[in-house]
Length: 184
Image 1 (cartoon, rainbow, N blue to C red):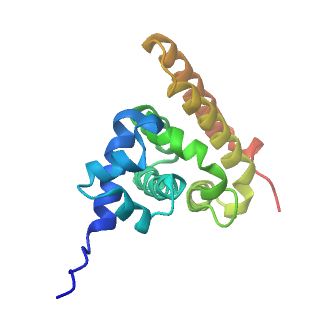
Image 2 (tube, one colour):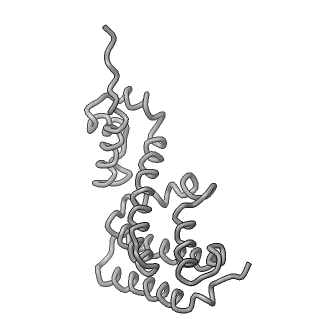
Image 3 (tube, helix red, strand yellow):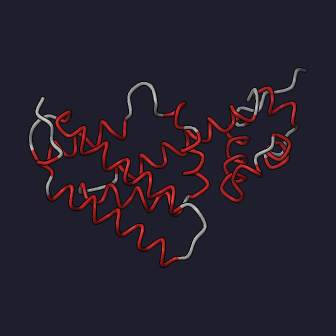
């Protein structure tokens, strides 16, 4: 009788890889370690994922979904960038993977987070979502730069200053949104 394929194997592998990445980041993600953590063999992992990069991309897609879920739960525009910063700071290895996977995740095709943020600004301030492209792009760049600094080891006081500077800048942008609004 042929063996019954494990329908949950791929999920077990990704869950194990996710756990390893969250604990120690890049250095912990070897195919052998993933196989061991998933209670399978390295050749079995290779059958599901061609290489380490394929696992990294699958993890990055999972983390992007987590980040979007966090952002999409915002009830106000001002909450979006605060949640973005909180996610990165609470999930530094995950944010690092998102940063490293940027070209595969965000550079081409639709960007759901951006589309959603544009719609939120248009709903609150009027006009068309595309009118707010410069504002959303500027806020993202501020937040991303801040997140990059917040995910680096450092003292809490410095992180507080960095975080508050970003929040203040984004709050000021919202207060003066007309300066960032384009008229298409």
